Each structure stands twice: as C-alpha cells, then as structure tokens.
Length: 244
Image (tube, rainbow, N blue to C red; front, side):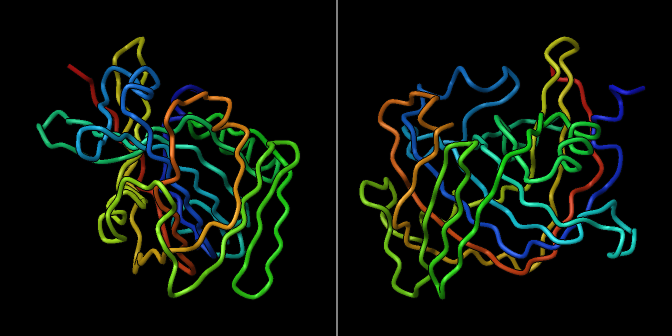
C-alpha cells in the first residue's frame, strides 16, 4: 500500500513564480551508465547529452482541484537528465530522468517522498534579487548561481548550440518524467501540463554546483540558461506500464 502511494496517485498543480534552468552539455558516453535500461539519452548531433539543474519557486502547490489556500509555497531544486522513452504503443516520448531532488522545507520532503520516487532532501536556500540580477545559493548543498535577465543575453562560452533557437529545444520542461522499477520492469510516466511557457534567455554571471562537480563528468560545458515566470503548471496522475 505504501509503495503504491509513491506512484503519483493523484494530479498536482502549482503556480511557478519563477523557474531558472541551467543545462549542461556532456559527451554522451559520460551519462549512459546513469540512466535505467528502459531509457535512452536525448542527444544533440548524436554527440551531446544533457544534465539540467532547475530551481523553481512554487506557489500554492496542492492536489489538483483543491482550493489555493490549501496549497503550500516551496522552493524546489531538481537535477535531471534529458531522455527518451518508447512506450507500449510505440510512441517516442521526450522527458526527464531525475537524479537528485531538494527542497527548502521538511513538509515538502515528507510529502514528496510519500507520493513520489524522487528522494527529496531538505536544504537551506538563500535568494537575493536586485533589479534584473538574482543570486540563489545553498551552503548545505554547496551551490551558488547568479544570473542577469537582459534582452541581449548570449549563449555561454563553449555551448554546442549555434543560437538560442537551437538551444531552446533543450531548455525544458520536457513533457514527461520517468521512473523505473528494475525489479518488475515497470515504468512510471508522469506528464506535465503548462500554459504560456516562454523561456527567456539569461546571462549566467557565475555558478557552482557541488553535486554536478561530484559527478566528475569529463568535458561538461554550460550549454544554455533560461528563466520563466508566473506560469500555471500541473502534473497528471502517474501512469504505469510494463517495459518489454
């Protein structure tokens, strides 16, 4: 019974006040051993695979259909690999495989770990906003990133993308998130639904992510960085299917 609860048993909705996403391009062989057998890497030019860090300020997160006053405001940090999955109907789905999840509140850690497989931990989050410049950091999780919103943001140095249009395909959010139970070869598929999702490029002034450094990925480069603001979002109830 408790195990079944972790399979996203109901839809969830929230308002994204902001979502800042930094995506790192990595030679694909560096990530092949980090995803389950049912998934394949979502690659660019058959050379680059991608790890993204999403930092999301949510408002009124709650089971879908419940009134907003019953929701909670959480800060969420997710480290995800861009992947593809071919479902039982033969359709190829683009999505994410989560490798680490953090939040700023114990309540979200408890509820998130009760109803998902994302293995949330609680950390400290510090935010400083000065005009178009924002810094988000955590001492406990050893990360800090400073971005500037501007109309003339340029791609990070060394990005494999030729322009922002090309980079936009790997900006997220991808429609699906996948979890895999290797013991019974069962895939859990969670579909996200959003409105008016228009990511805006940002300039990354400085960044450091201890978790990314700890992966010891060779040849990783910052590929793009985007922000979205004030977006309604919800996740559908999880759908399970057998793989092979």
